[in-house]
Amino acid sequence: MTEAPFIPFALPDVTALEVDAVVEVLRSGWITSGPRSKEFEAKFTAAVGASHGVVVNSCTAALHLALEALGVKAGDEVIVPTMTFAASAEVVRHLGATPVLVDVRASDHLVDVAAVERAVTPRTRVVMPVHFGGSAADMDEVAALARSRGLRVVADAAHAFPCAYRGRNVGTLADVSCFSFYATKTITTGEGGAAVTGDPEWADRMRLMSLHGISRDAWKRYTAEGTWYYEIEAPGFKYNLTDLAAALGLAQLSRAEAMWARRRAIAARYDAAFAGEAALELLRAPPDRVSAHHLYVLKLRPGALRVDRGAFLELLKQRGVGASVHFIPLHLHPYYRDTFGYRPESLPVAFDLYQRSLSLPFFSAMTDAQVERVIDAVQAIVREQRR
Ligand SMILES: *Cc1c(COP(=O)(O)O)cnc(C)c1O
Picture 1 (cartoon, rainbow, N blue to C red):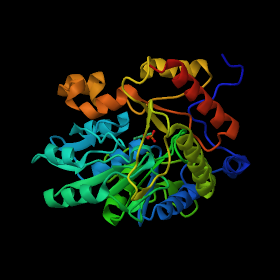
Picture 2: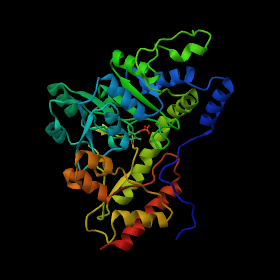
Picture 3: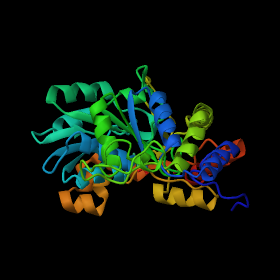
């Protein structure tokens, strides 16, 4: 149907700055965790407004470390919205605890705080809001609930750099906030993540556990200032971020504002093109928060088209547009369904959103021509399939 090259759902925005930064590390003789990781850790932590941070090799690792540092253990419960990625709940299982899945709000796919409140039991230890698509969850309401019930809050902020909530920076909204630098995220290190917090003891625990539970600055043991001697204080994990990745991250961080501005401009163009289309619904983030604009989600209005979401995605693909879906709610997956006895209707809002939402190609390296091709493809399919 089209001769133009395929537009992927996401592409990393990598320039000569990133290439040179990584090459410099390769030539330096020190490629794993070291000075670049420390520098990236300090700069990223400051950029999200937090006082302490630990960079690691994924957001999944950050979430695992956060829950471990907060003392989550077998028998505990952690409340997680079902509209999220595998990582949010699997780390709860890694600690032998139970993820209790709750529903989200239809307008913005953010966790429904009333549903969180209903899910609290005497075993609940942590609430894990997800800043879906780059908009912070209702963090004041979550914090108030957590305070009244003696719970901790770990934010899955994988989508949320840079963003703000009621004038506050994203790194200050939870006990621990966890970010992703995966290839498709708003800044990337290939694979990478960070956990930030206001509490120095949690930060120390996460740092310790991120590298085998070995006493502080274990990474220095092969340097001139280092020493061969180390002590294992706890059975930790292998979650450290390499300097190769951190160099990429530093370059990305220096361009984060510009990349964000580009995504904002693309979102505005998509909004203008789709807002008047009765067959489509847009995500409506609350006005008191500034989004990182990580995803651009469209929802098909029920009954408006002759095709369902799956067929719509197929038609987009035929026109060279690689859309995706965020997310297949956790409670629909065989593991969670069968282990905890969920039915699709157990969490009806997320189930409904799943069936009719799709995420358009959306990344800062997109050209204007690509944006217009995506818009043309969506509009043509809507025209052809309107009921
Ligand atoms: C990408 C993502 C993660 C996991 O990030 P990794 O860095 O790949 O571990 C966690 N939660 C959400 C909501 C994500 O989209």
